[in-house]
Image (cartoon, rainbow, N blue to C red; front, side):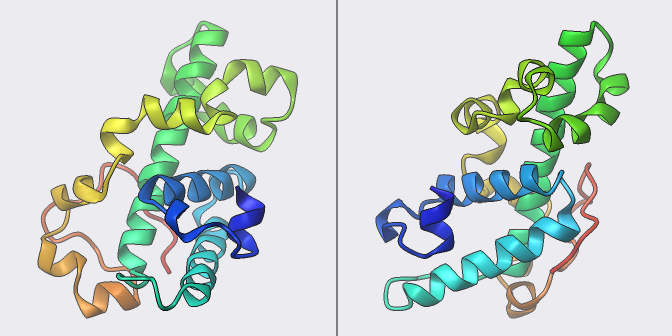
Length: 173
């Protein structure tokens, strides 16, 4: 999937919302949930894919949607990892949260893989967080439709106008 996305050979029909989430999930895990490193890869990848499919893309790149939704995905990954790590270690999720980045970074190690299955299987992760990640409607809890789809929001990240996010959005495009 990632190879086809990165070299823009992924069939356009497969470039769904779920595929966007899968791509971001892969980059977030690869970059240890560091938004400042993952977001440029995500942005550049989407823009490259859109350029390769220029005649078929109906909605162009939106920096605010990409940044905010990537932060939502990162929060879901951290939550999934903390819950799995806590369960495996027999501690509270809060205590385990600090171990999540290490688990994400080392998801190929046997200990990390067994402690955080949602960090190595996208389908499992997506099903676990379907209510949050299945579509963009969750962003409308934080943004008015006018702000989220404004020209400014398409160009650069803009803060929510309805209420702040309950998770950090540290890096901005």
